[in-house]
Amino acid sequence: MQKFWGKTISVSEAVELAVKTLKESIELEAVDIPIDRSIKMISSESIKCPIDLPPYNNSAVDGYAVRSVDTIGATQLNPVRLKVKCSVDTGDPLDKCGVLRDNEAVEVGTGAPLPDGADAVVMYEDSLRAGDYVEVFKQVAPFDNVNRAGDDFKAGEEVIGKGTQLTAFHIGLLASLGLRNVRVYRSLKAFVLPTGSELVEPGEQLQPGKKYSSTDYIVASLLREAGFIEVSKLSPAPDQVGEVREALLKGLEKADLAITIGGSSIGNRDVVYRIIDSEGLWIFRGVALRPGRTTSLGLINGKPVFALSGNPMAAWAGFTAIVKPSIYRLYYSSPPVEPSIVATVGERIVNVVGYRSYVRVVLSSDGLKHFVKPYMIHGSSYLSSAIRAHGYVVIPEEVEGYDVGEEVVVQLFTTRPLHVNQSH
Image (cartoon, rainbow, N blue to C red):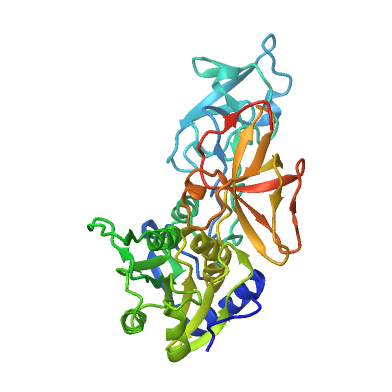
């Protein structure tokens, strides 16, 4: 029985074990889906550009396509006079105006293909139309004001790598390449099971000794934010082995993995560890993480079950440090980079050596620099430390803390305005 886990493993070890377990127990099929339904899905293959982008030289401005050599010496006082052969707009055939000859110009709109022989564009602002001629007041160099074929992407170039989480810009790129579908990994199916006899669903009448279940909503929302995970959130199960076991086994029939909330510690009323003891096996039991020491991973019927704390901030830390990166690595990917800033420590931020700490912090500014100090409520059960804090600082296991004056990276929770003052 794993009631007491003894020495905890490091966060890095936990992630490696979790990744190995997920890869061994979850099969990822690749599916073709329309690009307009692919936002936040993860590419299952490398995608190469089938054509040059842009596919032909085109004008970057409204003006006149010219041979740059014909504009040499052009000034306001000594303009060059060119014959306007015809005009080309976006969507017109590439050969509409034929080949541009000496001392000729073609009027072009932004995005219009350059006629053969032209190698630059004179902006309207640097010219004056006079009947069938245009006077050019500024000389241009080769390819001035021209979008050259392949400047954006060249045919054969990799534009999306395997494991890329698709953004709106990736989808726009796929559309510009003429692709209507994209091959991605299927969605991961997960469910969140809160445990605790004291829990009731929001909206129900709150009786003495009860509290509303909320940590499960946090974790389910964090999963949904990923975009490629289908999430089911189950109703709270009381601290009874039979009911929790039934909910887990039934949920795992259709899901790839489960995340339990609460019951992960070693108290007499904690039941999750009893079920994994009896129904499966442990991958790891406890992590050197503050908060989130009880974060664990087991297998039931060959499927992963992450056990997170019932305390909201401990569950968040366990999810952020271990669950999230492990799931992304299952998909040959990595989590999106969080917004962050560099700030100067205004009040010492401490750590327990041997633990990786996720310390919630608040920021201030003197108008020139950002300053950071720990949010003074340290308990992992207080949601205010996420709502009122601006972000968090990760302190590695080997670091005792950060002293006043040191610079640290703050991962941001919010864009809430900073308090500006002159003393820190």
